[in-house]
Each structure stands twice: as C-alpha cells, then as structure tokens.
Length: 111
Length: 171
Image (cartoon, rainbow over all chains, first blue to last red; front, side, top):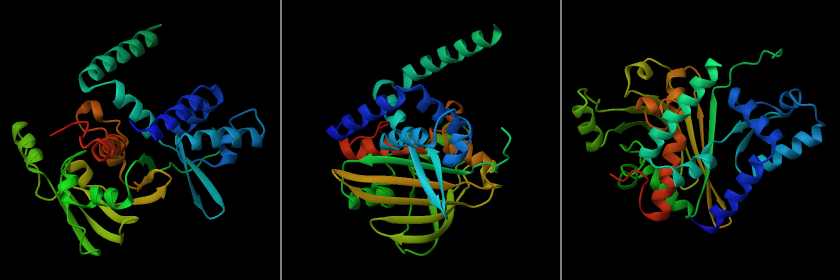
C-alpha cells in the first residue's frame, strides 16, 4: 500500500463520515448518472451545499462525473470501498461475513 | 420519485495506480498480464482496428470442465473502436461466456489512462444499454453466485498485481 493510497483512504473515510454524503451515495446507488439538479431536489440544502458535498465525494474518488453536452452526470465509483474491503477481508471471512449480513437482514425484516 | 428519467445503463469505475501509463496499458492489452488477474483470458488488440476475440485461459477451461460445462473458444467478441497506446482503448463488447449474456446487445467499453502525480488514473466506462444480465455481472452483484466481482474486483486485482507483483487471487 503506497503513500498515495493512504491519502486516498483518509479522503474516503472523511467523505463517508458525513450523513449527507452517504445519502448522496445512496441516491446514486439506487439510480446512477444523476445531474446536480436531480440530486439537489432530494435534499433540503442549497445548491452550493450539495456541490460542496459532491466535490468532497469526487476528491475521494467515490463519485465520478461525465459531461454530456451541457449536463454533468454523477456516477458512484465503488472501487475505493472495494480496495478497503480487499485489504481486510479475505475470501473465506467474506463468506462468513456475508452470511452474517444476510442473517441480520432477515432478522430485521421479520420485525 | 416524480421525474421519470430513463434507467441509467452506464457504469463508470476509476482507480489510481502507482505505475506509468505504459505499464497499465500493457496490463490491459498484453496476454502475459491479462491472464494473471480478474477473470483471466486474453485478446489480441494489436492490429489496432477491426474485430477482436477474447479467448479463455487454460485455468478457465479446466475450471469449466471440473464443473461440468464447456467454455467456448471465444468468450468475448467485439470491434476495436479506438486503439491509442498508452491512453485510450475503446471497444464494442459482447460477452459469450454465458448463454444469457450472449443473447444481449453489444455493449461499449472504454479504458482511459491519464497521468496524475505519482501514477495514473485508470477509468473504465461501460455503456451497458440492452444488456441487463451483463450489467448485473459487471456491477459485482452476482459475486455470491460465482460470477466474480465484476469491474470493481477486476480493477482492484489489477492494481494489486501491478503494484505488488501479485494478484489478490493468485493463480
């Protein structure tokens, strides 16, 4: 793991530490490729506030943008989280971890 | 949600790799690299234009046999749209490995390599219109069903191989 990776890791955890930014990622996970206007309509926040959060997500490489004409579309990039995952969870633990995650989901649905 | 927008069919992945552009380009295009990470397999893009075919590696053929099915000789087919070493490779891309994905449309795949301080940023853009089954595989949502972890898995593996000399799933 290189120094640059450590810098990016810090940026990822910092970006994920904020509930608004996690909400923006949830929105993009549900439907990818949204414009600023679309994202803004889901939040009680000024356009500048949303732009600022999106910039933090972009700097952490959690959001990638693509321009098409005058529109800018935002996409969720799962790789930084995948890299963190791959670092600490190996193939065998993963199966156990995902079985536990399934159990948690099931139990919570039953409530 | 009130505003009905079309379903987004493009997936974009980006990863920083501590290497020069040439090395990352080789890792995407040269057999001695492509067989070592992700799903493996190899294609010849060297003509820079026209049709390409991706062939399975021996590991893949053996794994198929062990599980009682035959891996086709061509697992991905497509056309080379742009071949600009070491910055851009654009392809049409049709996955034949699985009968369900074979029925779907050709998709469009672009690799872009950009130099950044300390290394490169590799961006993979996959336009998956008309290929929902393939989109589920490339997004990694079929990983637990044994379909591999899609682009996030491939690129994480690629980064590990280039930077450490070893893939996450050594073969």
